[in-house]
Amino acid sequence: MSLRTSTLRPLMAVALAVFASASPAQTPVPQPFVIQDPQAVQAAEALFQDVQALAKLVTPCVESRQGTATECLCRFQPQLERVRRTATSVQAQYPGWRNQVVNWTDPASRQSRAISVEAVVRQSSPACPAK
Picture 1 (cartoon, rainbow, N blue to C red):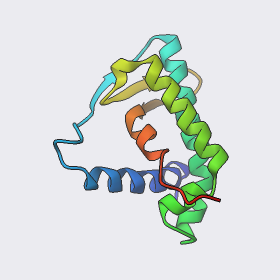
Picture 2 (cartoon, one colour):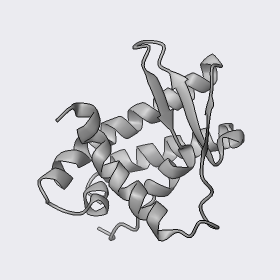
Picture 3 (cartoon, one colour):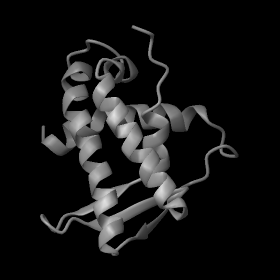
């Protein structure tokens, strides 16, 4: 299994659960658009990297059936909070990205990337039990 598949699996499970539980009237279909402004690319890439780092922690938990995607996310509160802070900051800085799938090319790797900031904000705010 590739790293890309394994890191995205838990977050996709959460995304599908959120998407499936909402009615079409509540969840507009995101429309992709490409960003090229260097500052915008840097903000999107920072969020993408935070999500990737959290996924690397959550994936083994989910794949070994130690908990649901949400339970595993809740085990990594500091990293989850970092994703939430970054996503909220990016969302405030780029309000035009609401209901959008943002696409860009990573300048370092030249790989195409995509992320929905709104979905990350929703998914990074699970109802975790108090410690």
